[in-house]
Image (cartoon, rainbow, N blue to C red; front, top):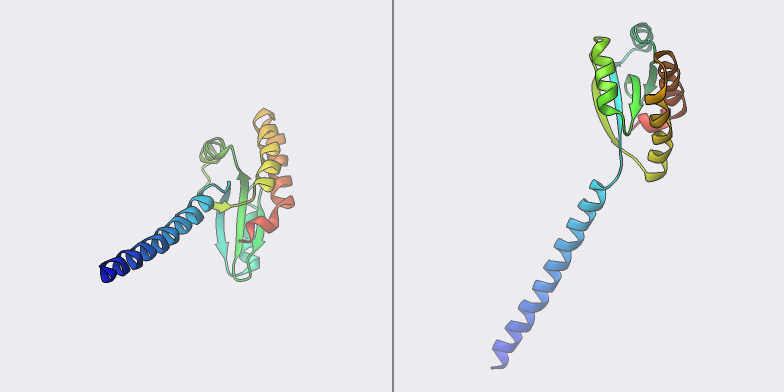
Amino acid sequence: MKKTLKIICFSSIVGVLLAGLFFFTIKEKAEAKNKPVLYAFQVGVFKNLENANSYKNRFSSSKIVYDGEYYRIFIGITIDNKEYLSTLFDQKKYNYYVKEIETTEEFAEEIKKYDALFKKSSEESQTQILIKMLESYTNELQN
């Protein structure tokens, strides 16, 4: 009887430990998925700054960001206007890649202010808004 009781206790302890491990692993993954996503529209990646500068001039709004290895050219960032910017850049026949960057709630709220203003603006103002966003938030694009 004692042997059976020991096995039951040992099994229960192992079960509780494994359940706790799985719970915290799933919780961490769920929390990571709840982070806001910044959509960065990238049009080029270069090893050489001269080439990046030459290519950058093809776009009305663009920013070169050096990540320590490559010079990346971005033409826009957004939280809420991914489809709108995609349509806009498709109409201009830009070839781009949408890079998803996890960000903080605080940063997402800042970008959302620009996003709300962006959709209400004229095309010329939209270009200026994109330029301002790219200039202001270069650090977030270096990830």
